[in-house]
Length: 105
Ligand SMILES: NC(=O)c1ccc[n+]([C@@H]2O[C@H](COP(=O)([O-])OP(=O)(O)OC[C@H]3O[C@@H](n4cnc5c(N)ncnc54)[C@H](OP(=O)(O)O)[C@@H]3O)[C@@H](O)[C@H]2O)c1
Image (cartoon, rainbow, N blue to C red; front, side):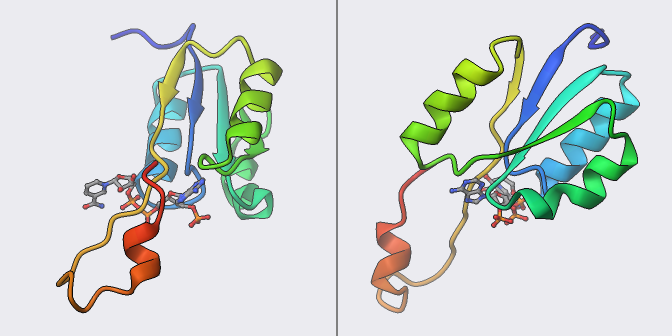
């Protein structure tokens, strides 16, 4: 699959699998990668790898307003990797109610 001409957006790019996706896209010669995180500062190390090709943006994917603003701001995206998310394991009787109520991303 040729990705060089793609313009990618990776959510939750500051760590874990999302960060690895950005690195893989850089390795695949993708020229423009929007990397998003809830805290823009947490993207500094990733952006430093290639400041020309990795563009940091702040977005909480559970915030509808932020998501709508983002889609207007970067209409050139044609490859979306919607990686941001939370995964909780455990016995439902021992899981805090806040975790159960956490919005699905
Ligand atoms: N690792 C696994 O075995 C596994 C298995 C099945 C599915 N997954 C899914 O794969 C994805 C990545 O997993 P991972 O292991 O890399 O997880 P991770 O290390 O916990 O990273 C999760 C990423 O999602 C971001 N995130 C969480 N809530 C967000 C929100 N409301 N808005 C924006 N960003 C948000 C986190 O940002 P912060 O740094 O701000 O928290 C972080 O960048 C997740 O969606 C996870 O559910 C993982």
